[in-house]
Structures are given as C-alpha cells and as structure tokens.
Image (cartoon, rainbow, N blue to C red):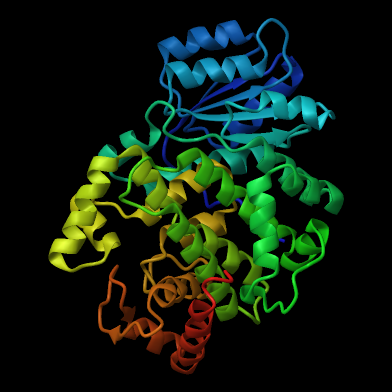
Length: 412
C-alpha cells in the first residue's frame, strides 16, 4: 500500500480557508482546532452555502472545504459556483453519507474528497499539503496557466471509487472499477500479460490480471487514465502514447531499483506518473510548450532544461502540483517534483526513491545514458550522485534491465 503522508512540518505561511457545513457543532469543532493549530491562517466558517458564496465575492480564499449534503444548495452546487467564480481555489468536499454512489454523483467539482467523521488532524494535514503545493509551482505565469478556469481537471469519480475500495480491501469493487472502463480494462490486461511483469501467459480474466499487477498498480493506472482522458492535448507536439509507454517502462525500472524496499510499489507509481506535467503544459499552454520543444531541438538540450530556461519551471513541478492537488501522498508529489534533482541536499525525504526515479527516467529513454559531472536536468546521469550513493554496480544492472525492457517495448 502507498504509505499515508505524515503531517507536514509546521507551515508558517499565511493562508485563507472557507469551511461550509450546516452542522454547527462539526463546523465549530473543526474551525476551533485549525485556529488553535495554525493561528496565522484566516479561517471563515458558514452554515449556509448562500452566505459562503457572499463571502467568496468579498474575500480571496486559497481553499474552500464544503460538506456535500446540505439543504437549499448542496455542496456540489456550491463547489461548482466556486469553480466558476474563483477557478484557482482548491476545492475539497467531505460527506458523512454511507451511500458511495450518491456521494460520487456529487463529487464532480471537487479536487479532493474526504469522508466524515473527519478528525481535525486529518483536515489539518490535508490543508497543509494543499498550501504546501505552492512551493512546487513558484512561477506566477505557469501558476496562472495551470490554475486558470477549468485548467486543472478534477479527479475522476472512478478513481475516488477505487481508492475507497482499496481502503476497504474490497478486491471485487476494485475489479469492477476497471471493468467499467474499456480502455482501462484493456490496459490492465495488456500490462498483466506483458514482459514488464515477467509473464509468459496472459491472465484468463480481468480479476486475475488485477491480482497479477496488484491493487496499487491498478490505482495508479486509473489515475493515469484520468490524466490522459482529461488532458489529452489536441496538438502533435506531444505523443500521449509515448508518454504512457515511457511511464510504464520508467515505473518498472524504478521499482527494480527499489526491489528490496517497502517503497517498491510507490517507485512504480512515481515512474508511471512522472511525465504528467508534459500533458498539462501541452494541453493548457501549447504555444509555450512548443516554444520549449523548439529551444530543446535548436540548442541540443533536454526538454526539461528547455522548459527551465524558457518558463523557469520544469514539467516535474507542474505534474507534482496537479497530483498534489488531487491528494496523492506527499512522498509521490515530492519525488516527482524533484525527479531532476538527485543531489538536492536541502530535501532529505526519501532520497533513495528520488534517485531511483531519476535513474529510471534517464534509462527509460537511453539505457546507455552517459555519466557526467553536474548533469542537472539533462538526460545524462549525474556522476557525483551515483558515486555518493554507491550505486555504480547497481547502475550496470539497471542498464541491462532497461535494455531488455525496451527490447520488449511492443509487449509493454
């Protein structure tokens, strides 16, 4: 299973939150706990959605959190209005309904979905993670591009349903999630019978395929499918198939690099999803993305280097922002954001996992990627990082694995 994110270190920056719930006791309890924990935050509360919308017109909020089941205006309607009026605001829904299908019908306009009873600690963690996303997207121009109206796709109800099934350890419901999406089902069967998972024979049915790849891999595939279907750019600048294929190979190499670690499944997930920032930029800022592609070709540098020089941000940070907004674990967000920084000494979280993804992204494109000093965001491999980690022998093994995987690219 993906590890739950630990509560982040104390967030000192200011933030403005709006919480809406018709249950006065719940509302006051959550607000009191958040104010006690983070006195520097502005926290406004309203029992009536109409009053919340009035407050939205008068104040700038970073996050709006709303109960879904309310009279007059339900939470879905409220969050739809928040999206229309303040598209850059992070929208979070929570509900105490035990009817999952009812809840999922309402979750559409939300970026994240939480279940009641919601503890103050869980809400605080969610808020801090959402606020902390700012550090992954420091460029104001790109921030506007990514968060402009309708630019950030909401997470799919199928993904929410799948996460809920995994948390309940309901394998049949997880299989049902895949069965209801023909493209996803085909991808699961393809992966489970491919050389990437060392299979000689195709599984006989979808349930068997899910058992082969595991529910966390299924979860990542559902999320990947949501990204692709909601962000597939209408441009020839980028190949969605190539992004998906390379993500799959990258995930397998990253998992292989972490084969003796409890984080090997997380390594596969970060590898699979590491390139979603390319889709975001190609779909939402096609002119700027094409310009970066041209710069990369003209100057003979990698696309991440070109993006950094033209937009002062890499696709890694953009992708991390989107995935963080969707509530993925902090380890996934941080590692994807820093996939071009194997020697980031200022960030000590999961350095082995970060190095595994760094190597996997290079080897998935070129198993013979050369070693050189100060490789930066290029597609070469940073020699100092390898020496410091004592991975020279491991690198040779991973090169061989990458060569074999790319030799089986059709099976992938």
